[in-house]
Image (tube, rainbow, N blue to C red):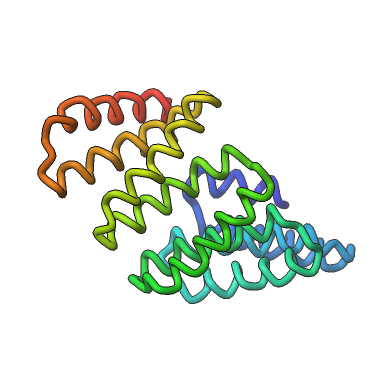
Length: 193
C-alpha cells in the first residue's frame, strides 16, 4: 500500500495517494508500527500540501511530528519541522516559518545530514530573501552550494545559484546575474532529467 501511494504521488495523483496512505496507516496502526504510522502521516501531509489543502497538510505533519518525537527519531522530527515550515511559508506566516525552520536546521546540523542541510539551507535562504535580509540569504545559499558541489547534488546547486541570482536581481547587482541564472537553469534541466 505504501509503495502504491508513492507511485500515485510520483504521478501527481494526490487523491489516490492519500487514499492508499490511509490504507497504509490503518495497516501500520493495526501492526502497532508507530514509525510506519508517522511515515504515512508525513506522506499524507505532502499529498495535502500539493493539493493546497494546508489545514489537512498541517494536521498530518503535526501527527507525524508527535510520533517522531515519541520515537525520538531526530531525522523524522527535522523533516516534519521542515515540512511544517513550508506550509507556513505558503500561507505567509513568516513568524512560524522562522520558528520551525530554525528548529529543523539545528536538528539536521546535529545529525550532519548534508543532503538535507543543502535543501534546508536553500529554504532558509529563501526565507531570508523574503525578509529582505539579503546578505544572510546569500550566506545560506552559499552553504547549500558548498554541500551540493561536495556531494554532486545538481538540483541543490541549481537552486543555490538561482537564489543568489535572485538576490542580485532584487538588489540591482547585475554583474553576477548573467552568469548565475543561466547556469542554474542549465543545471536544473540536467537535474530533472
